[in-house]
Every structure is written in structure tokens, then in C-alpha cells.
Length: 470
Image (cartoon, rainbow, N blue to C red; front, top):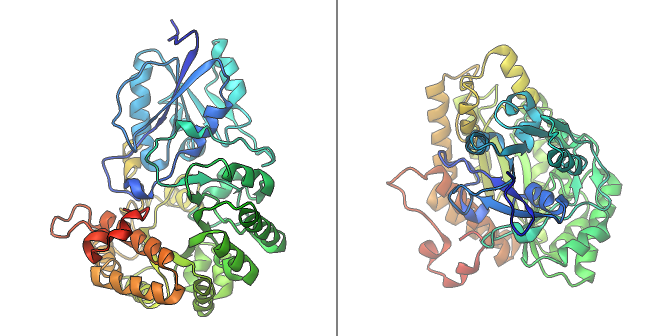
């Protein structure tokens, strides 16, 4: 019998959390609302009650429902399967979507009743109709739609304690980096959402802190630059008061007008996927734009961004195929001496759907391959493969040494002071330092000899308590 609430059917959305490992997203200050589940909330017909159970903020507790839909990253899919199993034992149908299920649908369908492969917008209405007729299929393949009239998420489903609102303005990526599955999931064309629609959504937000979840907000080429300028001008002209953060490629600094308007519209920090300072490694991972630019031009990029009061968050990978203890130490030395404000250091992780994963599977190099249980270790903080040069103990210990140097407490203080000097922007300084503290706390989470840090207990500045990273 269907669960009924005021004659409505009940859809329970679940955002599972990989709580057994540290990962990069378990601290509440640096996580963002699950947009995909919010979009499903909007797409679901009015004769359904929709509820979101978010393990980022609440412990799982069984709740009755007619239908359960989950999303999961690779690192959280083990937990998603576990929760789905609870509902399936009670005869309640379960749906799984998201990046992992889309890359591994044949695996996922063993643990849930139905899998959504790809973007959900084109298939959810059909899925609901099939469910109501008792004809739910085990797989639904989404197609790539235009970003015009994009579905806005049902934001009242999201937990009130999220510090940031998430907004998406583009999908897809023409690059095909070896370690990335974005082009597989969202396509290799850069789909632009109409600027006016983005601005309309921004005006509805209750948050004044915004994360643009685009893989590259600025995009590629002159057309994308003009579109970014139009977006930033629209934020300014409409008087939308937000502080925002985004990801972009190294071309973020190609156009000074883009930088000027980004800063004026509220940009405080930008994540740049630098990955490595070595051209040969960038070429190996198909990081074409970075390899073409060359490391000698990076400092100029950082300087241009800083001149507009924006902080730089540099993302780097350790454990690349040609890495040695010496090359990783050189990477750390480069990072610590470069004008990079915040450092995101991760371990090379072969995620399903990437060229890296396919190659390592073929070559038998993945060591943590007891799936689905071992997916919980794919959180970018653990070596899950056999390295060509270093054995497991050596590469793990060398990475630990480098992270100790990257997230040294005294160095982070010096970086904070340098950021203030470089950007002349206290907000950018606080954002970058707060992010560094979060990475510090993640890296040393299980080290009882190290204190848990925040801006207040280091500097004693109570005004920093308003930072989104505390």
C-alpha cells in the first residue's frame, strides 16, 4: 500500500554522507547544497510531498515514503547503496542518480531499483509516470538539454545551515583532462544558461554567499568572456549584493575587464586547477591549456587576479604517474613560494568515467578494488592504486610529509598576511585563510597532537566570527 499524506504520495530525497573517512567535504563550512536533488524537487508533480534527508546535517533515521531517490559521489555511493538496501527490504522502490551511478550503471542497478544515467531533467517526468503505473524501468538515460529555461532547484528543501547557496550557469567542458569525468557526464560542449535567467535566480536567494558550481565560470574564447562580462554587469546593475566564489581555468586572467567586473560584482576567490608545475605532467594528463601557457606565465596570472582584490585557490595533485619523492617535494616548494593564497592538495584518484580509471583497470593497477565497499576510499586523501615508481608505504609517507609542509600553521599565517598585502582586500584574505584552515583541519583531523584551528583562536579577532569558514 502506498504511503499517503493528505492524499499525496511521498518522495524522500536522500543526500548520503561518507562519514567513515575524512574526505574533502565533511566539514559543514565548506559544503554546498545538493543541487541535483533540489532540481528533482522542482520537477516532481504537485500531487507528491517531497522531503530531503541530508546526512551532511542529520543522522539517518528511517522515514516512510512511496519512493526514495538518492544521489551520490563515488566516495559516498557505498553509503547510498546501504541506505537503499534498507528501503528495498521494506518493498519501497529506490532510485539512484549522480556522477557515480551514471558512470557505473550496471553496478548501481544491483543495489537500487532504477538508475538515472546522466542529467535528470529529460527523464524525471517519465520516471514518475512509470512508477505510478507500476512500470518502473531499471534504467533511464538522460539526454543533454539546452540550458535555456533551466530548472531552478526547490531551495526550501535544503538545510538552513548551509553557509553558501549554489548556482549553476553553465554545463559541459570541451577539455578532456585524463582524471576528470565532467565531459563524460555533462558533455564536451560548453552550454550557456541565459544571463537574465541566472540573474533572476540570484535575486531569489536568501543567502548572500554564493558558490557558482560551474567547472569554469569564465568558459573558453571571446564569446564566453563577453557572456561573463554580461553576467557580472547584470549583478552590479541589479544591485545584487553577494560575495561569491567560483572555479575557472588559467584563462580567468586573460581579460582585465572580466577581472574588474568579477571583483566589483562580488568575486572574493577563484579556484584554479593548476595540478602540477611540470609541463610534461600536464601534457600527460591532457591539461592542454596549462601546458600551453607554461609555468613561467603563472605568476603573471596570479598577479593580475590579486590586483583586483581576488584570492587564488590553487588545486594540485600528488601521486602523478611520474612523481617521485623529489618531484613532490619540488611541487610543495613551488606552491609555498608562489603567490597562491589557498592550497587544495589531493591525491591522484582514478574515478569511474575517466581515462585514468579505464587505463588503471586495464593495467591492473588499482589496489582498492573490492567494489562497492572500497568506493568509500575514493575521497582524494588516500592512495588507491599501485604507483609505477613508489611502493604504497613510500608514496603515502612522502605525501604526508608534503602535506605537513603545505599546511604548516606558521606558513598559513604568513600566507594570510601575504594575501592581505597582495589583494588589499580583507574579505579575500579571510576567505583564503579560512579555506586553508579547513584543509589543515581535514589533513590533520585524526592527529590529536595538533589543535583544531579557526580564525578566532589563532588571531583572537572576534570580527572574523562572521567568516563563512568558521
